[in-house]
Length: 316
Image (cartoon, rainbow, N blue to C red):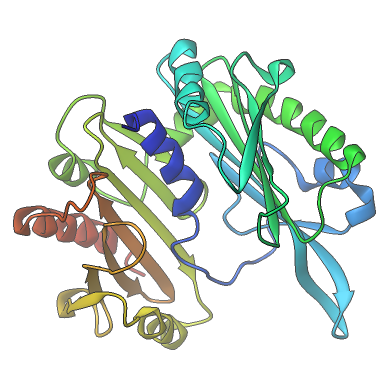
């Protein structure tokens, strides 16, 4: 059975994909885009994504085409995970490594980046674009790095990336960064604790517009939001989210197109509240992390309480 630490680690790696929104030029406060430019100048220019902030930074290489700059591969993301102790940080990575190799990647140890550090290398059968992931730690801070590209990494590119990762680890342990990423400014934490009762309650801000919370028993709550061009675009985004693979419960109290998505026939067993405030689109998800486990009616009501707290805090 997966440990709760593995659940939280996996949540960090996948929650960033719940919403796909527009991004604007920004910069990472603890890993300036200039450092990425210096490490990988042959893929210049690089731009930092809108989500770059404490806890998470992402970068994209831009190439000429279509009469202007258009986003292309590769993409590079850095996400921090903060722990109560250095031993817990090591255990978190060990829980991932103990899952073993798969058909899509093989695990290689990287002791130069930490006693339990590793890289997950795509296998020849992995689909394109391919992703290479690093999981490292320094003191109490875990760092998860993902590189996605259409072409396999060269030896020189991997060396440059691992030098960049080592530098990013040192910045990630700064006290101000740790304090900022151990809370979520977008929701009422008391409401989240009602939904996630139990030991070892954890919260982490995963960059601008992204938060995750977990408990030792395995439940997790995640929030992701992005900004559209205007309120009409936000409503259109919500309507486009619906698919034939899930059931949808209208939530008029949260907006005309707000819904609770549940009972999906594909993907993770989770409930997700989709709603908007102004031009911002939100996805608030709850997953019990138990096979075929659906939230109870009472848990769904608590999830809606969290959603209401987000809507109130973030109202334009």
